[in-house]
Every structure is written in structure tokens, then in C-alpha cells.
Image 1 (cartoon, helix red, strand yellow):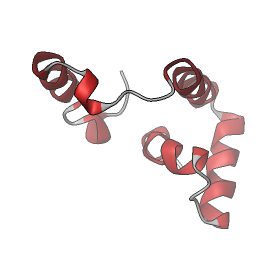
Image 2 (cartoon, helix red, strand yellow; image 1 turned 90 degrees about the horizontal axis):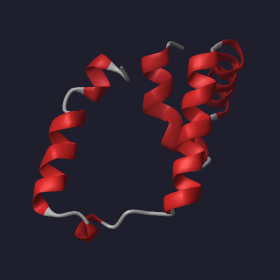
Image 3 (tube, one colour; image 1 turned 30 degrees about the horizontal axis):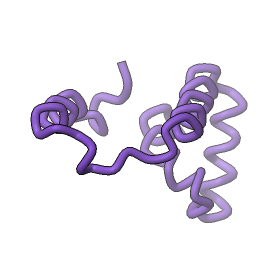
Image 4 (spheres, helix red, strand yellow; image 1 turned 90 degrees about the vertical axis):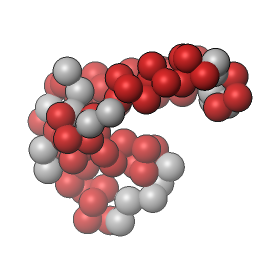
Length: 79
């Protein structure tokens, strides 16, 4: 598993939705990649602090800016 694949599976991992094989690959990558370890820790911290961010709490301008910022995220991965 590479870092891009890892990022795409974080939500499924946290929600317990990965198959046994996917979970094993995910956790093996996590043990060997300090960057992804930090990413997962930051993701957990964000969830803890925010709980959730209802779509209606964003202004149309903020929503548009976020969508623009993350366009192509799956293809490029985090900066």
C-alpha cells in the first residue's frame, strides 16, 4: 500500500469498514510510514475536536473554496 491508497482508506478504517486483508495492509503501512501515522493522528484529532461539520454550517463561498482546494486530492494526495 502506498500513501495515496492509505489516505483514501482512512475513513473506512476508522469506521471499521475494511476487509481483514485491507486492514492488515493499512496497519502495516501505518507502522512503516511516519507521515501517514501523523496524518491519521491529525484526522483523529480533527474528529475529536469538531465532532462533525454539518454541510449547512458552511457558507456557499466557504464550501466552494473547500471543494476547489480538494479538487484532484485523490489523484495528487496531500501536499
